[in-house]
Image 1 (cartoon, one colour):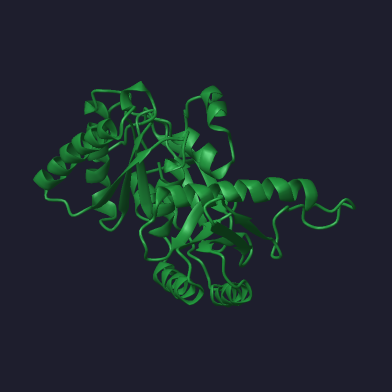
Image 2 (cartoon, rainbow, N blue to C red; image 1 turned 60 degrees about the horizontal axis):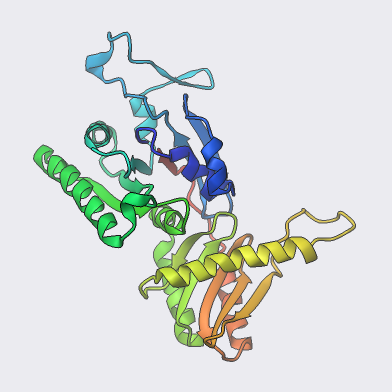
Length: 326
């Protein structure tokens, strides 16, 4: 959700592999658009993309003619239908569109309405487009986030609403949008504590520095160990995915046309050694999710054994019915 702030561009870049520069030619969203994401057993949800100028029709507005009904597939969609089964709402604010009065008013109204139907819903606020001339330094980005966060939290406090809200600085021109969406998706995975525990065991047993469990399709990481996430490490692992996929598309496809057409399969793995002695190790563990590890040179057999153990243990049923609203 949000006031024409780049919601559709985010969706296309993260889940549909569109180049950020291509999003400049996207038309605005004029009606409700629902996309089904099913990359693996954990990354399974719907994304509801709402028109930027849509205002929800409350009970006091039923007789107001200019408030349009929301229709999808010939069916009228009401507030209860939207919010009651929703796991997370991502509200996108254009950081370059000052002042933020209209966006914050829309966010406050959305929070108030949603809380009636689903008090446990998660609110994720993307302070988006922090990549222009106004945000050349990190200080400007932090000040922007502080201003927006303070205003909305003060309003929520005045209403005495108990809501779960997180804030992220994002841009489609760097990895920040993937990092933010990783946090959003992780909160919808009930098995997250188990996955984190397995990755903690892995890095301890194999003397690793950092470990990620990625969804290869979107480059969203499903889980990581308990060590703090360093943005540079995430960017290295994310770029490694692109390298492996590109090379696999050239040299890993069968010429006879057999197979499912995927360049990445259960036998895919890669090792990249950096100039500083750091080693990046990639291995597919089970149907598209892949493990990315950072460690200094060490024995590889024990590492593969541990990865196979994780691959066996993580074959559990993923969440069903989760939805992210925009």
